[in-house]
Structure formats: structure tokens, C-alpha cells
Image 1 (cartoon, helix red, strand yellow):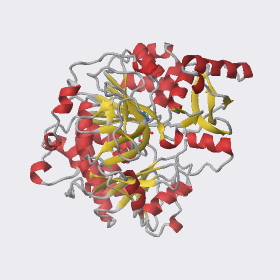
Image 2: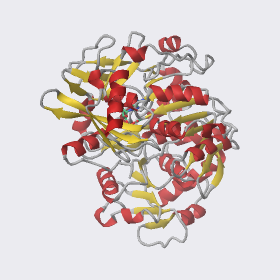
Image 3: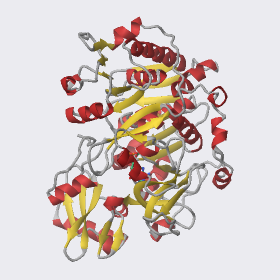
Image 4: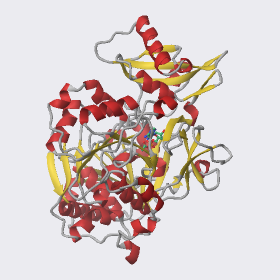
Length: 574
Ligand code: 6R9
């Protein structure tokens, strides 16, 4: 721990929206954020209005809102275009008898129609349920069934994965594609859109009315429907300003799919609430393609994930030099621990620090972050967002002193805090079992300077011979070895030590598995971190199991190891 704490990379941009962190934190009031919105006075709330229509009303309708590209399409939509199209889809939904509070799911690859659909659903006060396009039959059915979804927007290619005969509540399917054969319950999206008026009555809702239902996996059981309300826009707007540092003419790219909370909170809501141009790139990851996307769109603010940054690091420095990335001003990361090695590499190669941000589906928005005006300690998640109180507490709710590992907890409430787990009140209450606190399920410690350091999920922390070991520290060290592309570390039960550390490793191009290499890698950790942190067992794998958002699924590694069922795999990559 102390070894990592010493390193500091000083601030990129002293003149950011946030300014001095300590001052901003001390003087913060949520009411100042609320006053940015007209509903503070009028009481008329709808997030889609604030994200799109408000900018048109302010004379900014011609500004590009969405720059979409994939291998087949390259299209620009202004705020006025999105206003018209989302109005049309709102009317299409109403034409099918869908109304406020209904759950309407979207299940398709990234496309302009996906974004228009989400906005249209919100405009009528219905609740959006985003699904990853990679979900197979059971995953789709579980979510539609649990939520009682009445409608779904999807494509002909994905339709076979929707078990309509087992979903009696699912009345309407909108199909986005060419030559759609309509039948009972199937609506041709494009034809319906053409026939619909470009004007609509926005459904003004209460700030505590439903906005979005994101299903996410826990360590046990079926996926949980995490329910957020329109009030969350306060957090999206606030963090869009102080964390993403969005400014008037920014071109912003969040690489996440809306099937994941990052792809909605920060791939839709935060940028559009700020009226900035939002880049969406469909298709699969490739380093050349991503750098080309940054270059072509002149991206200024870029939000991605450690897994992507590690792959870009794996692709090397030479390819970076082939592109003009000079417009990039601010880089951020979320989803899993951001290895110090990656922060150092990014700083050297991109000339910018990568700013780690910590939050969860359940928290709806960023909570602990690194800011452009604050020194970064590589490996730390940063400090609480102004307006947020975070602490490390023990199982009885006692706040622990600096450098003690415990539960990462957040003082309740905050604007984007989940308001329900759909159909599962006991699950919801587990998070709030200690009065006044939200218990994240992550373990961390806070250092003397108030920086938070991620240690693991509660259930991932390894205890070997009485030493508590965070798998992240070991994994971070492992990926610093030149042969290691990615690493996942678990505690393997051991009769004498309680647990030993076992590492699953995928190798970089040009390295072949061997016993010598295993010994060398183990020695590297032993020498670079500590003896008790060195893996006693190493297994090479071509690929590690990962969620669609790039998290290495340690629970799957553990199940492999122990010959146990791997549990719910609906969020696995492929
Ligand atoms: C936004 C998102 C939440 C879990 C969270 C934690 C891990 C997220 C992290 C991080 C270390 C970070 N996580 N950000 N771990 N450093 N900066 O990722 O939501 O998919 O619900 O995952 O991801 O374990 O509890 P979600």
C-alpha cells in the first residue's frame, strides 16, 4: 500500500470547471445544481426535455448532438433532429397504448435509432430497460419477465432470442430494419416513425418518477433490476461539469454501450444535459479504429475503461503516433481498478493523465473521482465528488481511521442513488443495512490525504496466512510484467494458509507458456510487491472471462478452479 501511495502526478489543468477541490467540496450545495434547471421553479420535470429540447429552445438546435459511425454508417444528428425524432417515437409509443410508468426495453446494437428510442421512451414518462445486444435467450427472458416489460425495440437479427410465447405481458415489439413483415404485436419501426408527427406533448413527471431500469449481476442469484428516477439528472449534470469537465464546445466520446450504466449516465445523460456533441462508435474494439475515431471527430473528452486502456497499451506506442490526437484534453476511466502502470503509460504516450472514477450501477453516477485540477496518485480512485460523503466503515458502522481496510460506504441519500431493486425489497435493504449509509460491497481504504484505494469486492479479498491481500494489487503488478497481457487473481483454498493466491494469465503476443515463465512471473511479483502477494499457482489461458463492460470475472475463475457452477453468466463477454 505505502509503496503505491508515494507516487504523485501533478494536475493537468488548474483551470478546470471544478477549480480548487477542497474549496469546491466545502462550499457545495445541491440546491445550486437544482437551480440550473427550470423545473426548480416550474415543477415540470423530464430528463429528455432537459437533455434535448431545452437546447433547441435556447437557440442551439443546429448544434451537432450525435456523431454516429460504424462500419456501415456515418451520420450526424443535431439537437433539433433528435428533438423531432424522439417526439416521433414518443407518438409511436403512445399509438400502441404505452404510457407513463410502463417498462419499455431496448435490445439492439448501437445505432442512432437506439438513442432516439431511449429519448422517446423517457419523453412519455415510461421506464427504459437497456439490454446488451450480446444477451442470449435466457438473459433476455429473465429481464423482460422480472420487469414486466410491455414493449421492446429490437432488430430482426436479435428477434429469435426473444421468447414471446413465454412473455405474456410483452405486447409490442418494434423492429428496426428493412422489409419488416408486420404481424400481430410486431410494428415496423421505420414505417411507424414516418407516419408519426414531429411534435408531441412531453409527459411532465415528478422528480422521483421512474427513468431507467438497469439489470446488473450480483455475486449470487439472478440479475437485479436497479431502478433510477429523473432526479438522477442532478448527479449527471453536476459530475458532467466537475468530473468530465465538459465545456461549451466539447466533442465527447464515452466508449460504453448503453447496456451498461456508463453508456446511459455518461453515454447519454451527462453530455446531453450539458449540450455537448456526443460521439457514438458502433462495432468492436480495435486500436486503429479507436484512434481513428478520436482523430476524425476531434474528440476533446474521452471516457473509457481499464480493459480498453490495457489493450491499447498492449498495441504499443508506435500506432499512437500515426494519429492526430491533439484535440484530446481530458481522459477518464471507470469499471474496474485502473492499474498504476496504465496511468503512467497513458501520461507518457497521450501526454495526459487518465482520471479514474469510481461508482456503480446502484449509485447511478460518479462518486469518487480524480479531477483535472487535483494531483493523481496512480492506483487510487481519487476523492469524493463535492456533495458526496464517503467513508471506510466496519461491519457495525464505525468509521475507520486512515489506512485501515473496510467497507467502502456512502452517506445516504444522493440524487442518483437507486430507489428500488425491482421486485426485490430484501436485496435493496441489504445495501442500507447500516443506518445512514449505503454499503457498496467494495472494500477500500483511505490514506492520510483523503485518497481512496480500491481493494476488492467483499467476496474477492484474499486471506493468506492471516495477511489480507487485495487481488487488484497483485493483478496490477502482474500486468507490469512484459509477458502479461491480462491477469485475474483469486484465493484458492489451502489447508495450511487458508488461501493461496492463484493467478490466471493471458500472455501478450510473442510469448509462449512455460514453467520457466511461470517462475519468473511469480518472482517478479514477489520482488516487486511482497512475498505473500506472489501467486503460488499460475495458469495460462488464451482469454480471461470478462463482463461486457470489461471486468475480469473472478467468480468464474474461482468456479473453474473449484469445479463449481459459475452462476449467472448473462453478462459475460462471449
Ligand atoms: C460504473 C460501473 C460496479 C463495480 C464496483 C467496483 C468496480 C467500478 C471502479 C471499480 C475499481 C474503479 N469498479 N469502478 N473498481 N476502481 N474506478 O462500473 O458499474 O458495472 O455496476 O460495476 O465495478 O467493484 O462495485 P458496475
